[in-house]
Length: 203
Image (spheres, rainbow, N blue to C red):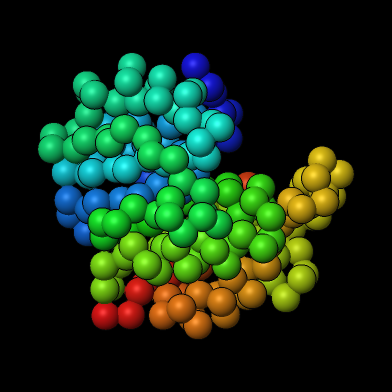
């Protein structure tokens, strides 16, 4: 199965944020579920959680394998992991019709093209219930200024792989989000110079 060392390193810290912010029995859409390790761990750790996984169509096979093998047993009481859906944030038709209490995404904004980040925000605003939360985990800069030397190196590495990738600006994301009715409510400092940006959809 697909395996992400980063997921193993950050899952406990992210779980603590989710436990602080998600309402009981939350229905959550995860954008870019990757290997599925987060989905399985969170559903094992939080009762009543309904977790909808998603990935780009080309990456669905590995995600489906993990959910099929690990996502149906050993979960916390009342929790369930829904089988993955294909979701390209820049394709409006891919976003599900249903509404969610939260949209969660980890380590995706620096991988997707910068032009797709506003699409992520638009899509999230469209599927969140009033008062619902958008939680975005990853490395960020502020006003173009890196918050850590390691993020400078990481940004250079990403851009050497693909010029469309790169560490994104949290201030720009927050401004774009506010224009869509997603109000910044928290900026949580995470291990390894990462952060979780949290936005609440207008009631």
